[in-house]
Image (cartoon, rainbow, N blue to C red; front, side, top):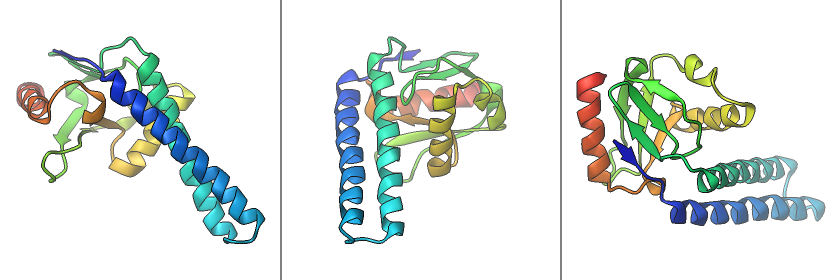
Length: 167
């Protein structure tokens, strides 16, 4: 099964995160120059601006990619919804698939038995991006619904079917 990427939403999030990242860095710099905030707060602004800029670049990669957003097969899954990488994650490597208790969930987290195999196939930017994702979500693989052309219920049903059969 293949689920396409929603390019329009990816463009929107790319522009939004670019603007937020830019303003966080610029305003943090402005306020530190005029003594309005401490160096600790400036570092926080700089860090958050950098993270937003990294996310904007990842969204740019999604927009320019010709890959399918999510590919599910009996062998495993390929997730290109957050950053195109075309890496097959075998079902035997998946520990569990979870989603937050909010309804509808905004994402699905795919927990791996061993992350090192996944990270070994990535370039430096992808590795950095997925390590930040792992810090935030406790797993590098997060299926973000905003970037996929499917409903929450449809993705939930498909993931339950595949995880019941293969995980």
